Image (cartoon, rainbow, N blue to C red; front, side):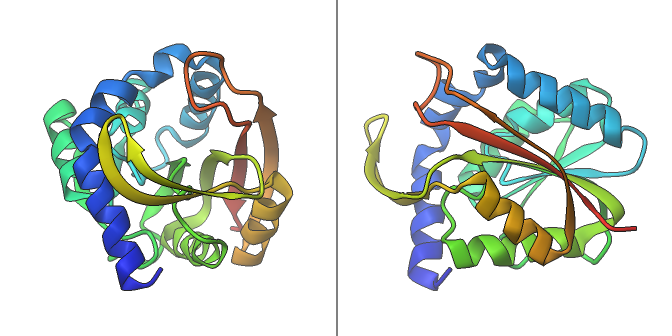
Length: 214
């Protein structure tokens, strides 16, 4: 991601932070499959070490995992999102960071969850982000990745009454599976679902469970 794109993403989410909380902090209440998959991920990683919610936004996924007895932290590009996350989840550690260049040592995390964290990344940037995820995971570390299914890019200049400048990228499951394999991950399972009516943006969703080789 070049600097203007990077700055546009950060600025847009800084603008959105408070409204994002209003609309999405409790979204998991209405998404049973998402909760089921997070529960499964929690069981797989519980007790294995520190888990990172990458692209955490206001920390609602980190909060859910913490409630499942997972030791979790969060990283997000937007300082305003991190401010919200810390306020809403004072017992969890949240830090700003760029998933394309994480200031994290190799083999730090036992697991990563990235729920819709790649949606503002171009295809080339997604591949770079996945290499970074692989780098910071311990051998055998697990990844749960969620994204919108499609092959288009949508430019958005307004959301919930806020002026923004964001590109949203949709990916096929096969495409992201290929990127994961190229980054060194083993794909364990691919799950897709139709959107929940009246709950979320009406795109099909994909969830990939993957593991870094031992």
